[in-house]
Image (cartoon, rainbow, N blue to C red; front, side):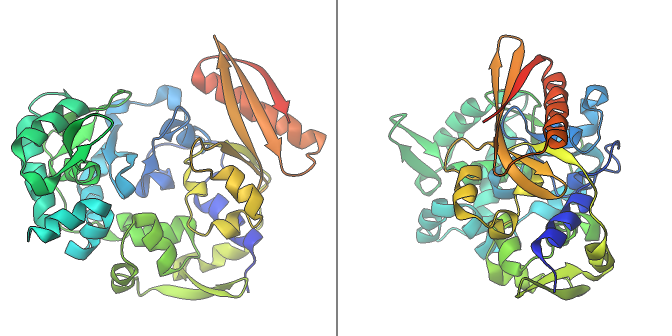
Length: 362
């Protein structure tokens, strides 16, 4: 039997949150993709894993709309395998991933994968030079027939559905230009998709390696894929691991790491850090009131990680060139822990290029 602390300690080590330094090449979370949402997004996730983000060569990185239609950062050299890894398993899988956009396509007798390819072909023809997302969407609205389009009341206009737009972008060989808002799409030079992702970039294996032990339901929730599809592609080299009475699975090669001792480490995790993306939220935060605080419908805070457990939330407040970090602890924090949190807040301020005005422990 494995308890939640062993699970969290395993993930801290697997995701390298306990290391002092590292490079892009040896940063494991880039195998599954690092979500880039908000000011403390992908680069901050790399920073808390020991990567010197001030020395990054942006040409080594590529930003793509992939899992759940969210922007994720990857190593550019591995783009062919990534493109193969994030592609839907089947037409049924693609239909689930595009949500309500699937219904009109099915009613018109259009296959979902065929529809994504159609959108991709149109997008690639439009984006011959870096183009703002809104302009691409507008042109698609003129070129695509009704089953691809939806009426947008706030805009009083007709747009292409959002999820097919996002999931077709990589199929079209398009990336997101880094640090652009609104997003700018541009062609990927020499783009090609690998035939298969290989074990390293296979998303089910990557989830088990970085967010295990897990069930097919957990992985399906992360991918927005049908559980049936995930089970059909479930790895053979797994072992069953009971976690607090629930049957879960882990790659057999990773089983010894479940018994590794925890490492004393304090981190301020961004709101969309991979550590917080596991679909077993009751394992991460058993208390429902605290879970609602960490994962509200809108405006997520970051999480305070101390010695393998989540002990509170944090929010940044910037005024001019000064940053204040407000921490809401879920328990009494010893003086040494408060000092470690303050050190991490200093690190965050340096990452943002501002000075730390202070840490407010609510």
